[in-house]
Length: 177
Image 1 (tube, rainbow, N blue to C red):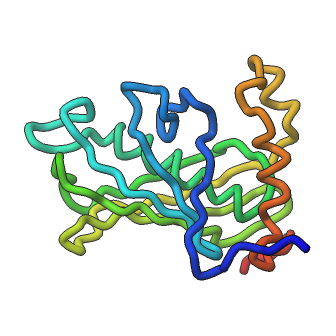
Image 2 (spheres, helix red, strand yellow):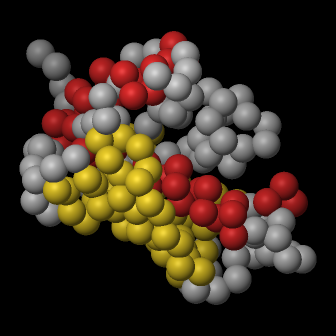
């Protein structure tokens, strides 16, 4: 008998690839995101440092956008499909200080055919929401990635991704949740 994970326990999700700029553990210049799934939400804690500086003492908007793109992309574990970013919009609500942990969380707000509409937010350890993000991801077949490079680095990631969607009673729908 296969025992499903407890839906009240966060599930650590694997990195996109070992060298992914957002979540890859082998990328010394990356953000080092450790991403978790809890039911219909994904989240990660990020602390920007001098590698990500914009204005003195603050994170660069591009580093924030990269963190959002990577984290929002992990909602694909909820949808159960590989996908690519069609668009990403970040709203910067307050300065993001270096060396302060921010939790970025995201969920799918709607799914229409191949388009996944995702919303996220970044909240500092002081409880202040400093940025929000919205994105549209387009579901693709794994062959999409093969056309652009060696997909051996993905290993069994695609199969695991597709199998994972049903763990918490998810379903594939063309409608929003």
